[in-house]
Image 1 (cartoon, one colour):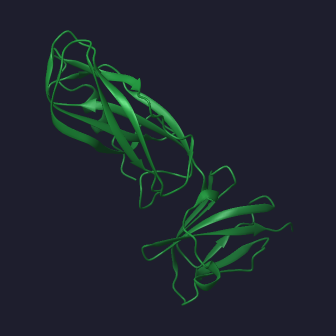
Image 2 (image 1 turned 60 degrees about the horizontal axis):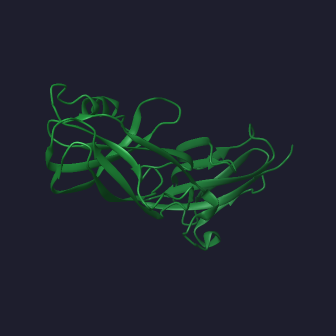
Length: 226
């Protein structure tokens, strides 16, 4: 996934001579869910506050980004709110409603497990005083897509102590296979494969996300003891 750390730094440092400073005043009367299902949506409110000494009067936007928990850079970002001209005198705030769609990568911006969400205001010729962060846990077991997997995906032998053949029952090769543990941590990722080797994994039950074409399937894999 393309890194946007350079873009983020530009946003946070835009126009150091600007007299207007905006920041995030906190959540409003709606708060984000702690645990969500992949593909679900979450709607909540935040306050954007004029923390500077000059009046702001311009089009206001708000960006949300997903921060890489293994680094300090941002993975993805998109403008989630862009409205008409807003006027904020120093110390004044505006309540904005945001919606996040928790679509999991590679098609979406989020990952199974813990995701760190970063929010900040954007506008022309402003300083940004701060940002807001919160975390959500995307639970793979809450996948809302109900499929008759046995009629679509082949995965055998399952259980297995070593290699598992994975693909479509029509002979299509998997474009991507990603295996997660029960905490949503990615343990293995293979692209354009017909087999995956789970010999190095501890005995237990794992979740595999399989992409064939533009469709995504989720199945359980059992690593057997040797």
